[in-house]
Length: 318
Image 1 (spheres, helix red, strand yellow):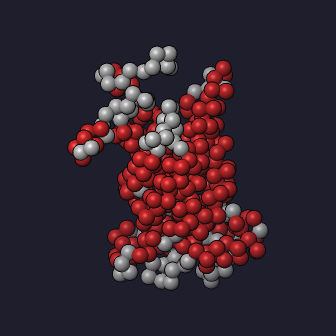
Image 2 (cartoon, rainbow, N blue to C red):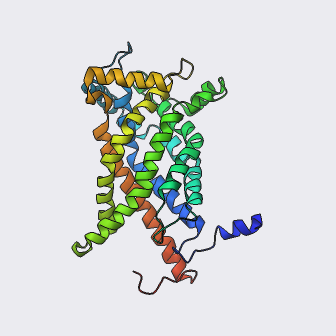
Image 3 (tube, rainbow, N blue to C red):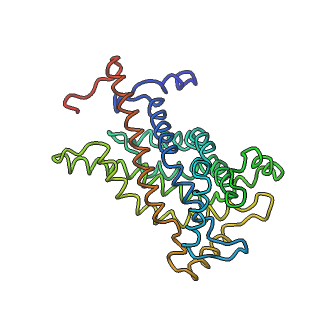
């Protein structure tokens, strides 16, 4: 098969789900951009709650103290804090999501369900293979917010890149190991699990007139607590590893794990699961926003394909 033919096939509408590969990718990217803008304030606040787990002397503090410090930052600069890290996250919709969704859809090409659902195998493979593309964006995002308490402002992206360049950009890959676990759980539960659960809920509650948005919200609410319980400790490791000074001593996975263990010894499960409640709220918002945005675009593309005659729905389909 020639490269030209492969490129051409990318835009051919499949009679299986009524979309071309290009339209499917665009729907995923659009849903991701919609989610990113909506959940950024919660994302920023959660990072600060987890980051302020230690005081200036490096000693663990009570979770209530960390929450109070995060609140103080948001009260002092609500708009700046809410929008912090948004630019690299929006840029990351391309740099992070194109490799992840591209690998995901590529691996699921032969196993995509009739309703377009993603297989767990494809979700796992995409999580591991896309980590090198995702981690630098997450590192920059967290570094931007890391010094809000002392400066009251974001750290400029170019300053982060200049500091990283002095070490051949290796600091941008801090936290890659916990990211792989985090990304895997996100893909398995969020991309593969949530749509299947949403379809089940919609079918079971169809006689109550439950629509797509409500069924998506219920599915996200069901999946999110499991997702957060799995990923919250991994998120803590990422924050610990990615908010240390770029030009200072890096914190490895083992050292970060020891920090979380020490936190648990002093404050029990409250220490381990700092930001857990925020994570659940963020997860429900993020999953619902992502899938709703994706569904809106998917339906729009499919209706367009029907209207121009490039797709004919099966007889009896809704």
